[in-house]
Image 1 (cartoon, rainbow, N blue to C red):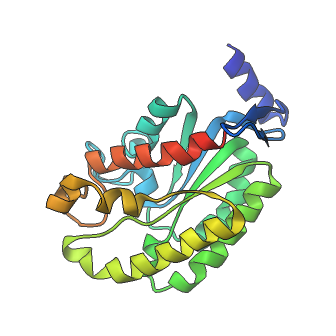
Image 2: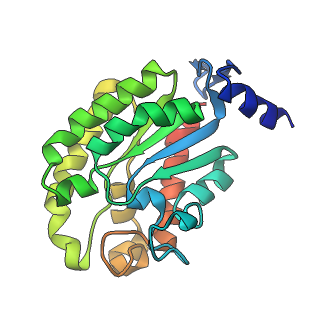
Amino acid sequence: MALALCLAIAAAGGCKSKHSSPTGADTDFGSNDPAVVVALGDSITFGVLDTNVETCDESNRNVGGFCPPLQSLTGKIVINQGICGTTSYSGANRIDGVLQRWRPGVILIDYGANDLIFGSAGAVIGNLRIMVDAARANGTVPVLGTLLPTAGPEEGRNPAIVSLNAQILDLCAELNLECADHHAAFVKNKDFQDSPDALLSDDGLHPNHEGYALMADTWRGPLMRVY
């Protein structure tokens, strides 16, 4: 009942709250709801090619992907705002509306794979800066994610992925951001080392059910360090 009331108040612009982080520092969420987390990204955020999620039809939202297991792991309300086929440019244009609609305490930002496909990787870091600035101006804590490794028909993208991930990690360090390093989590996974099929779908780009579960676990640490 209290959470429902807080969500209703947050939608109206209230429910100001501070929570203590593990270091003892207070995180000021302003008029946002610290129990609400939004995941902003592309088809990987949407959860396509997870079990029973064959397409990006809206009816499949929240059926799979990392959002449902992340919600179970953290006890937060994780709202899936992934849109298939989008780039970081789309994210930079969408984020203000998403923040105003949901008033999340934290926003998870995961873009770059489609930027590489469409040849616009040079704009990713600038667009991520725009999204970080928008989140912070809203009183929402941004958390960035790195790109997954690819395999099979998409394996040739790995050098560009490694290069872009290095820039994303540098941005996290520069702006003092929490960052979920999904790439490291995958490549260090023993089952993935034995066979990428352990964590990736047949297309070599999207995670399978086990891969999405690992993404959820990788988001969990940086997310919970905010509180």
